Amino acid sequence: MKALKWKLYVAAALAGMLLCLLVVVFQILMLLASVFGGSEEATTPSNLPPAKVSEAVLQYQDVFQEAMKEHGVSEVYLPILLAMCMQESGGQGNDVMQSSESKSGQIGTITTPRESIFQGVKYFASLIKGAKLTGPQDENRLMVVVQAYNYGGGFIGYVDKNGGKYSPALAQGFSQLMAMKMGWSGYGDPLYIEHVWRYLQTSEEATTETPGSGEFKIPVTNPVITSGFGPRWGTNHRGIDFGQPIGTPIGASQAGTVEFASFGQSGSGFGGFGNVVLINHHNGYWTLYAHISVLRTAVGQKVKGGQIIGEVGSTGDSTGPHLHLEIRKEKMGAQVDPYPYLYPS
Image (cartoon, rainbow, N blue to C red):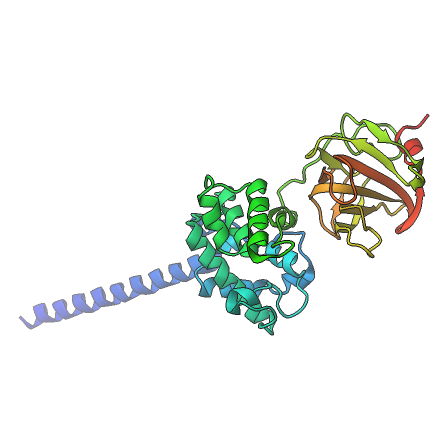
């Protein structure tokens, strides 16, 4: 009888030891899985930031992620928030997300970048909820949310009453409506979507077929010259105009680095050009592309020949849709006739 009890004790002890060993093995396997990851983790979408935003914006990436976690915003929206920050401030100043008005209704009430980012993300989260945005894959509805960040949440209701989808015409119409209502000359940025989207990195940069056999390629397909270089209307026309429909892709004439990509304000050296891009080709030449409707590049971006940098428009001092192209031997002047560079004899 005693021998039987002793055998039972031994069996129970061995079973306990085996159970403990299994628990330890399981914990080790779980630890290894957490360190090296599994197939589920490997398929999680990357949230790498857009390559076109400045270092001044990228320095706040961790703050954005912290704010997104606090306000329940998925990290898949990180690229768009960084692009918005780039448009709002370029990462400069205290109110980097220009979110004072969404917090207090007044400008200048936010005093630190961190406070600005947390408020901006909080407001962005409220707009996602208000627009019933299911995810960034619904790009049209995402555009409604992003434009509403600039205009205010009222834009969501305005879109819903007019078909429910974003369009440049609705953005322009809401701006005009609010300007009249407020008694202002303008309201918000009707091109906010175009201005934000230019900072979003795509997997492959779009290019266009730039024709010609010259040192510089012609920046539009099916080119029609409507005005040449030289005297014109009592002034000196310092470039060539290509008459093109609005929206025609503009390709860089040569590889280079973008040194200016914005609306040419008076006094900037680019006044009257509307939306303009200036590229340094690092060979003693610069090219300038003016009156653009939509900018598709940003300062500091390195572009290849033929890479799309914008779309033809009629912004600035323009009498109709066209691309004004200049070839310069200095950044801010010394224009030469582009024709021999585009059409060699």
